[in-house]
Image (cartoon, rainbow, N blue to C red; front, side):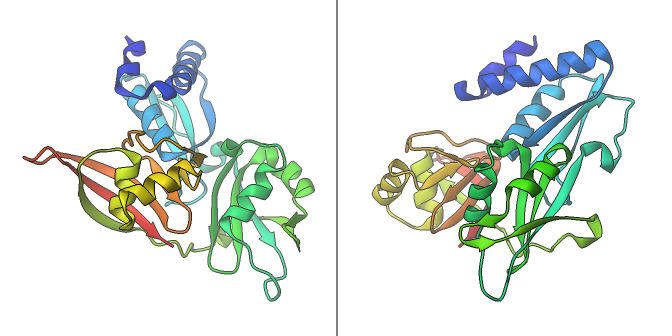
Length: 260
């Protein structure tokens, strides 16, 4: 029954699907909720698709603020409704000398990963242009505060913040409709960022493109619903809706695009 979900997703996603099936079985067998680490939008889509087939179980998600990209999922019996604190998300602000230094998303993420924690322990990293905040799992807050004392050559201090102190991020996604000949990674990068297919292929093969925050060097990789593609120096795109095919057999897409 549930194993048939494999056919709807990529081969590379099978181990994640196995994890999701395990979480669902645990909730079913023990009648206790399961809280995931932070998921990217594609992973959340997979969880919702699998849980959606089961009327006894519901899924709630929260990443620290309403527009969060990365969220923790709370899988629970249908009668249970979690509170915000059940998601165990802490906001940490990065205190640093803003007059003398600047930070970037890449530098912040690189420093967090250098602590030895995996990407799924961190939610969104947001900035209003000078201040920076990162959403983390409650259980890792103390460890991160101890470990992160500098980002590059900049001395920093991680400080917990309340939900009333959340920054308003300056990132501004624009919604675009595109028609593309295929769902290949190089085709989408070329089409959205107005570069040649050859240039897109070179950038992918040289490690300048990430899919859901993981480096991907295959130009022919098929992009799917809610995938986020980051292209160094150009920005990010997300496949928000796949609207079907045209008479000429091209894909009609609704994309979110964040230009650098």
